[in-house]
Image (cartoon, rainbow, N blue to C red; front, side):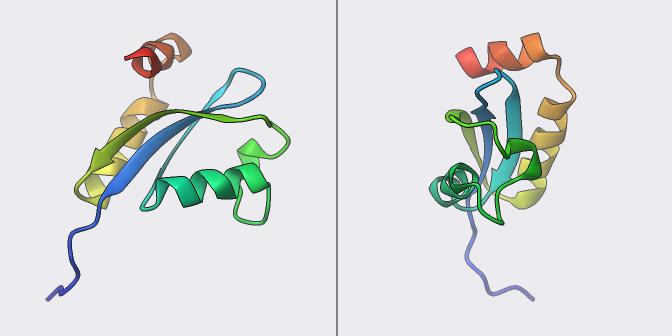
Length: 88
């Protein structure tokens, strides 16, 4: 029995200052990107010290499970495949 309204999940990719791409999911895209940029306790460890960062890709999903599946698929892609995805 769930009484919560449907939530939009976001899959996002951030380009770091070293050219690498970080992929994650969140319910609040702007808040999460700000947490990464602030380098505070909620920043992903991978992103620490990799500023400036740029949000280069995002996609919406109707449920967490779909966002997680997409995140797993993207993390398995090669760097070239990720770059092609970011360009679309």
